[in-house]
Image (cartoon, rainbow, N blue to C red; front, side, top):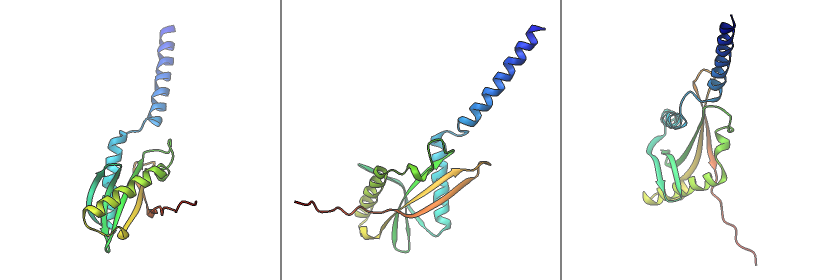
Amino acid sequence: MGKPLKSQASQRVFNWLANVFRRILPARSAKRFGREGEEAAARYLQKKGYKILERNFRVRGGEVDIVAEKEGLIFAVEVKARSNRAFGTPAEAVTPLKARRLLRAGRAYCRRHDISVSKLRADVIAIEAGPSGALNIRHYQNAVSPVIPHSRRK
């Protein structure tokens, strides 16, 4: 009679731990979820009338997840996807350093393709997984403004 109680207790502990880990660990790997997020962002932009020019444009010191064009403007788009808010919202993940790198890469793209930098805009697309697993997309237009250097005072 002692053995069944022990195995029942073990089974309860095992089930409890399994439920805890299911809640904590994401169902998808972070890389896979990030790729799915970028795909969803590209589809979203296309539905909104943007033309996707390039994906994962990289230069030394910067990267743009999606380069798109609409109405004569060029958009450097940073995509942030989160399966949960354990590390904050996707939009909060765009740090000032990441914003500078996004603009640097966007300017490099414009120079490389002989496009005026004045036509460059930097957007952020934040993607979160909803309770049902569906993706919630928020588009922050012109989210990153270029920094205008100030002159040094003497």
